[in-house]
Image (cartoon, rainbow, N blue to C red; front, top):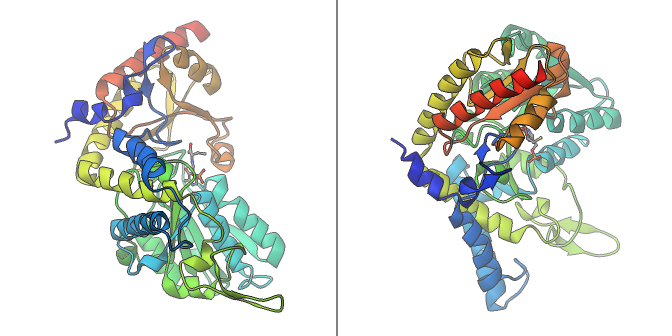
Length: 404
Ligand code: C6P
C-alpha cells in the first residue's frame, strides 16, 4: 500500500497555497509535478558536471556524457527495449511523432494509407496530415463508440495492403480510455503495416514493455512522468531506425562531412542532431528511478481507487455527464454540467485552489464527435487523495449554484 502522505512530502509544490487555498492539483494529464529528487538533480547537474556531451575529451564532458548515456540505459530498461540505441532522446512526444512522420515521407507513395484513431491528440493527427500533403497518402480514421472505445471490427476492415502505418494512443488524454494496443499491433503487422504508439498518457500509469508489445515505435514525454519539460523518448525498432532517414541535419549526427557528401552517424546519434537537453535527459533517468521506487503496482492501485471514488462522487452532482466511459480506463475524468460552459467551472474552482484543465484538450475531433465545445478534465496522479476529490466536488457544487 502506498503511504500517500509520505509521497506527497516528496513534492514541494503540493504543500503550496494557490489563491489562498490548499492546492488541489488535478491537471496531471497536462504535466505531472516534480519530486524533490528531480528538482535537486537538475541543480546538481548544473553545479557539478555541466558540459557538452559526446564532444570533449575533458573530464566534465566525459562525466556529462556518461550520465546522459547511463540515463538512456535506465530508459531502455524501463521500457525493455532490446538495445540502448533504439532509445532516442527527443524534446517530447510531439517531436517523436514528427520525427517518424517525416521519415515516412521517403517511404509512402500516393494512394498509400495511414490509419489514425478517432481519439488522437492533435500531435498524432497533424504530422500525419502534413505527411499526406507531402506524399499523396490518405488518412483514414478508426472510429469509436459513444463510450469512447475504438471499434475493433471497423479497425479490422480498414486494414489492407494499402495501410503503411497505424498510429494510435495507448491511453486517450481526453477520455482516459486504455486502447487494446496489443491487438492493434498484431493486426497491423498481419496487414504488413508499421505501428506507432503514442504513450504520452500511458507512461504515467504503467510500464510499457516494447518487446512484448512488439510495436515499431513508442513515444512519450518526460514531463508527464515526474521529469522536466523539453525531453522525451522515441523508441524505435533498430531495423526501422536504420531504414528511416535522419530528421534534422547538424552536429553530432554525422560520420563525415564534405561539401560534396555527408555520411550519417550510427544510431542513436543519427537522430540526435545538435546539443540536446542534456540536463533533461539525465534527470529523466532520475524521474524514472523515482517512479519505479514508488512502484507501478502501487501507482495503479492508488489511481484506480481515485478513478472509482471520483466517478462516484462526481455523478452525485445533478446534470453532470462523464465523457469517456470505456470499460478499460485510467484516472482521467472528463465531464460537463448541463447548461454550464466548462471554462466557467474551471475559472471558479481555480479561485478555490483547484487546478483542472478545461477546453478541447488538443483533441478537437473528440469534442466534435460528442458535439460539445470542450470538457472539464480532472486527471489524477498517485500523489492525489480522495479528500482532494471531496474538495473538488464541493467546489463544483458551489460553482454550479453561482452559475445557474
Ligand atoms: N497532452 C494534455 O493536457 P507533448 O506536448 O509533446 O509533451 O505531448 C503531446 C501529447 C501527445 N499525445 C497525447 C496523448 C497527449 O496527451 C499529449 C499532451 C497534454 O492532455 C497537453 S496538450
